[in-house]
Length: 269
Image 1: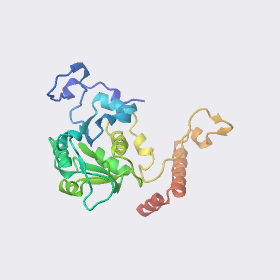
Image 2: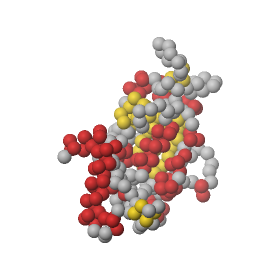
Image 3: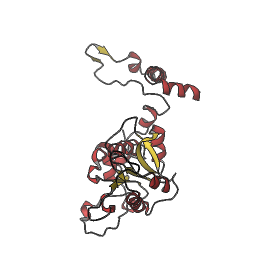
Image 4: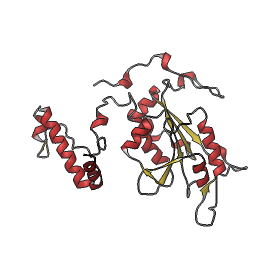
């Protein structure tokens, strides 16, 4: 199996980013020209790359197929203590991220990026946002880059979200202490769709949600384990029958486990 990520990249396709502080050129990360860039505004920049630095996404990061730019929100804070939040207008528990602080961070992140949101989405990780789906990941992967705003506390002042036309996206119907975990999950789903990140591009075409269905069951050696055998059709060598079996299994699983997906799939027929 070949992997485009293993192919050496010519130096002519790599770019060097300017920096105000000295650095060891041997440690400077490579960046392929035109590579996808993920800017993440967060109070916890040390949380990144996290799991994004492992496995295929980490290898792609090292090869410069994409670039990660964590932006610390704290330096944009106000006053001696760099305050980033204040009490909610109208009262209530918790704190809210200030619009002026978030505005400064978004303006910083906006430097050098396209204004067109199709080319560069700006996203706030929010439980009230539109559900994140495989289609969302494909849309993000088709862009030149993305800016993700990780919320904390009770959220972000609505005015700055409206002013910057920030898209709100939700990882699921639950609440996290902050957007960092959601940002890593969304970036993982997006980065793996970029050219050269996966060794086998067909993998993204056969997995769950690629065509609105859950993925069929998977098997591997040994052929018999704990008295359980691999389905005979998968060992038949008949690729047409294998494809037919996998499709039937995917439909059966989707119908049983995700009736919402099944209904949507039926409407598309």
